[in-house]
Image (cartoon, rainbow, N blue to C red):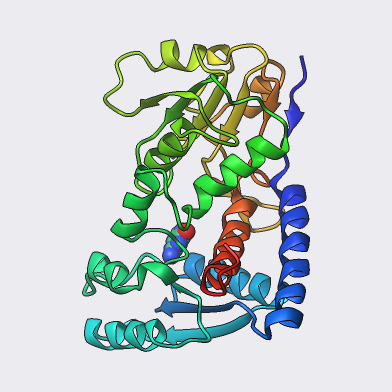
Length: 296
Ligand code: GUN
């Protein structure tokens, strides 16, 4: 069997077009556009490239984009004051503080200072709680992207066995909660595996939908995949530098080349889940404005 590729790059284009269209309509009817502020502290190269892409995407879909670049040695107090300013700014609907932050700043204190109704990353405990009780306001971006890929690829989820490998707060835990809720692209039976799991192979082999977010290149072997299963590979592991391009070589958590011969659907790395995260950040920012206007 050769698996159907679920391409994040293509689904991203579909969703961004939908967002762009909705932004135009809301602007015409209500005279408002979604506003996103990105706050970057320091010059970590990976963070700079993520934020640059977030800004570019926000502009492309017609958002108001405010870019705040703070020096590495900014005080926690100054950063908190900036968050407070944007919490009160009616033209801003989403506040994004790029992580990681320098060591002298308490990351939790900063994330918890963001108004939960502008928390488009959905990292604030209020949004985590809303998700757990089945009343989410914003879905965390990477899990939201995963669910959207599953839905748009037409993978059946109702009653499916979903196995999640990884228990991080930003991917493993929230995607497990989302897939177990009632509703679209969910209503599944969910198992969460992690470094304490005794027999990972046993659990992976049971999965109709296998979601791997462990951060370990090639962890999941092709023989562990149930024929016809949907495999979502969240791993983005830098395994070297290409001699040709000088760019990092990326590898997922799943042995892709062999797994694609067994799975029914599979996401590539790169070009799979990766492009979905920023896309869903845009969706959350649009939704934040829609909540404010009473459209959601
Ligand atoms: N750093 C790496 N990924 C993310 C993300 O999704 N959101 C934020 N705020 N920082 C990140």
